Length: 97
Image (cartoon, rainbow, N blue to C red; front, top):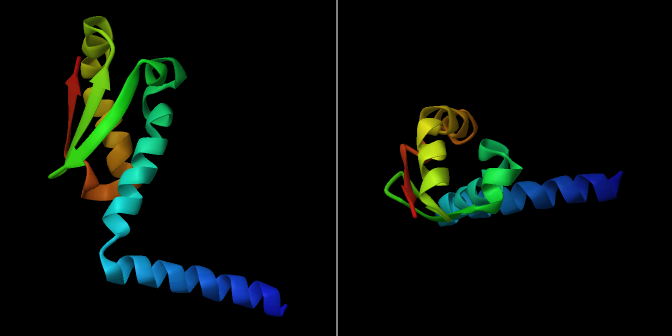
């Protein structure tokens, strides 16, 4: 019992530290980058990579113009799913080739 309480308290403590230190944005950014394949699919994720998140804009590097066109066509759907998971963290997506 004490171990479960200790682990829960440690999780709470880390969570409080992250939110109080202003590092929550960095953790959310990392999680967003890790979840990129969930938003675009495994195949598209192999040929694209999240590079940065600045001022609410997610910058994504794509390997070719065809993939850029494909992702741009689904941009609103991708963005909607991200906003469902992360709220206003991501306001727009910019694809770069």
